[in-house]
Image (cartoon, rainbow, N blue to C red):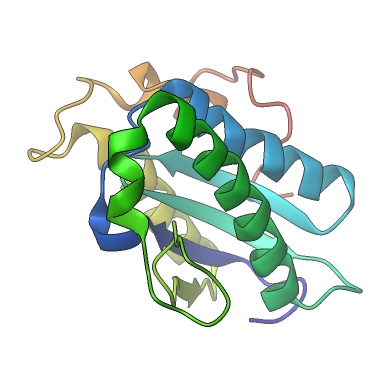
Length: 171
């Protein structure tokens, strides 16, 4: 990944485990995104947080390398999610145990998917995909994209400023 380029990014919880059903867990992710935006490391143009993964349309800003920003974001989010899991769902923590040199518990699957968005049409296609994700047959979380709270759909369809950290994809 490179600075200043928009990417469609998909990041998944280890083994697709559904721990992001808890809105407080989703808020941990949102709060870290805000932190990274406030530190001028990223811009977010669209997002959805699903029960076991999230999608972003994102760009990275210098001087930190994109991989460093991703590492820092996921490290912080993981730490907070592990703390909450130990308190709220202690029976689930063993699902994230790994035998690695640098960690005993792992929240995120390695190798997130990052697709470079070369033009406006592709960006719009990915935004539609992101916003329709909660309506997919296997999820059926809402009937309309703007009904799903943890998404940028309201920002684009209703001009809702709930997630004021978003940047319009055409800006």
